[in-house]
Image (tube, rainbow, N blue to C red; front, side, top):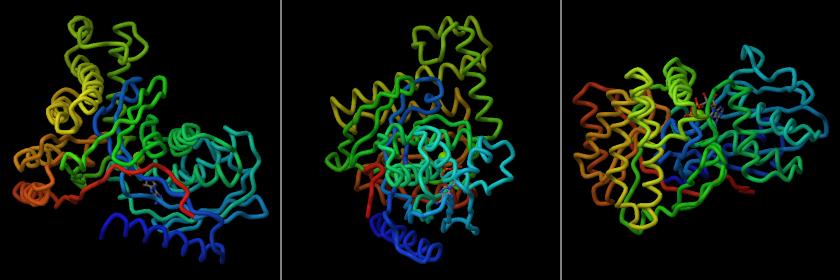
Amino acid sequence: MSAAEANERADAAARRLLNELAGRGPDGIWSAPGRVNLIGEHTDYNDGFVLPFAIDRRTYAAIGTRRDTRLRVASTHAPEVVEVDLDDLDRLFPAHSGTDVPEWAAYPLGVAWALRRQAGAAGAGADIAIASDVPVGAGLSSSAAIEGAVASALGEVWGLGLDRVALARAGRVAENDAVGAPTGIMDQMASMLGQPDAAVFLDCRSLETDIVELGLAAAGLELLVVDTRVAHAHSTGGYRERRAACERGAAAMGVTALRDLTVDDLPEVAARVDDETLRRVRHVVTENQRVLDTVRALRSDGPRAIGALLRASHASMRDDFEISVPELDAAVDAAIAAGAIGARMTGGGFGGAAIALVPREDAATAATDITRAFAASAFRPPHVFTVVPSAGAARDA
Ligand code: ADP
Ligand code: MG
């Protein structure tokens, strides 16, 4: 099934679900995409640089307004309809236990809560039906997609007049404070601001963005995603431990965030912290530089010039930040052996997905070779598919 077909099916599924939920058609349908981070991993919470792009897989929110103040949400991914009163959102969030609403519902309800707080507007109740073709939990940010679709829908239905960055912020508040996942704002910004065949260069300190043309099709390149199907979880100790190490490194150097260091500072870092902290810091500092180098290379020489930077990024995550797993390393190695010009794990690590930048004529062989390499290591078969850098959140109907 092509991505366009999958999008159409998800759109239709959202309409159907709204019909079941509310016995009516939608007042509007909004969608927002998942994302892949091309380069810049674990740099976001260090005030650094990231270069994600929106993908051609989307989450759809069909919305029907109500005359009362009830908010009802349903998803084709969830067994139950969740209903709350808008006036109860402040009692539900910030979430401490997660027992009041099922976890999935904290994403859309958390967005509603964040928007009301942010815009200080009352807004009427709504029925929201959600359907998606973004794989959940595969590192493609299905969470930002559901947040972006719901934020765009409610932002417009409630007439809040918020720009895309403000909607991204609401998604982040939902994820951090309603769901309780300590993530940065990269995913939401990519999902809101993405453009076809382009990446979103984001300065996570200033939140300034710049669109960077990728020119993949013109260069005869495809982007493969290898979903290892190894479950990742941002809330696990590994993620927290990495953040703590970064804070330790910044404190030892007397800077606000690792963003304030350059590769020239690394010898001094080495003199002040233990070896493990040094390696964590080195990853972040060199990764920030690689993002800047990637943007420069894309602009001056096009996508074929970034292969070495992608490979160096993976090595840094594997050896210095230690967030890779054997499945991700196997995916990267097999992709390179099959002709990829660059490959790296993407996302938070400890599982999830890898990406490979592959000449179009090698893409099919690369997919087969990666699957074969997984079988040889007795890993679960991966899901391998292409993604196309695509438009961000939009109103579809
Ligand atoms: P990722 O963002 O990498 O896919 P996360 O753990 O951050 O993984 O977010 C996945 C969670 O987001 C799911 O477990 C679910 O709670 C929620 N979610 C995402 N998409 C949907 C959806 N279409 N319907 C309901 N919940 C969703
Ligand atoms: Mg997520």
